[in-house]
Image (cartoon, rainbow, N blue to C red; front, side, top):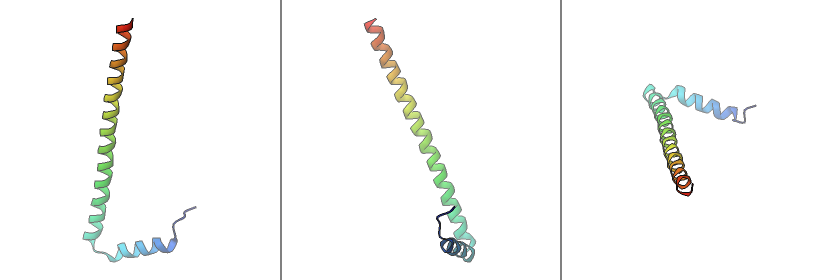
Length: 68
């Protein structure tokens, strides 16, 4: 099952309940920002990898055309 200490969960829940709505909103905003940043980083990585693959294919094609 879960390896998280139930007391730790209870403490976090109590802290959230006792904090103001602004603090909760800030945590939600921070979480959303992190998700968006990870998505942007993933998309940028995929673009870099696709460009590298295309460059490699082009170089391989040039080698094949020159030797053939």
